[in-house]
Length: 161
Ligand code: S3P
Image 1: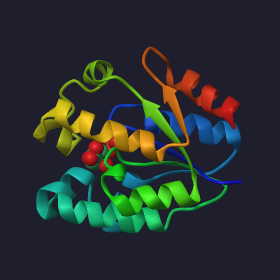
Image 2: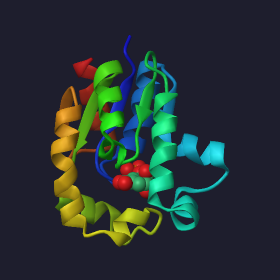
Image 3: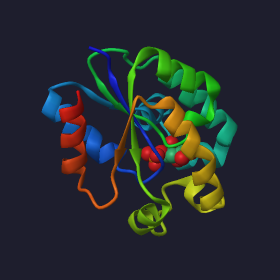
Image 4: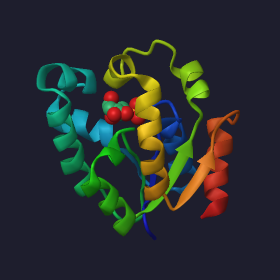
């Protein structure tokens, strides 16, 4: 079976849903950001600080290309859709679920989270709106997450598959 990839903005709940869904489906659960941290020995904020976003994006694409195409659940970083190469890879090889969350809800969930470099740096609304269409175009399915627990979202995805 095709691997299930979760995409969506920071704070859409990808990591929590990943854990629950992987367990429900008895499949390995992987996370592109965690893979990057393991292979580089650095945290994501450290990579952004010491090497910059462009290098982080290169590592993100390298990592994505090595992720499983079958029998796994994978959570991706919120910016995975920034690269055309990444979007094409996702569309071609795996089943993509977009966790859609409104910006107001994301604001409530993340507050002043300082573990996400782009949450501080960019104009949030601009970044959010620029990515919306890319998430939509890349996904096979969209799941609304506003007002739902990670358990409910994982169950919805499970029912869908
Ligand atoms: C990013 C989102 C983060 C992480 C990095 C960049 C982004 O992942 O990959 O800080 O560009 O939106 P999460 O979506 O898990 O927060």
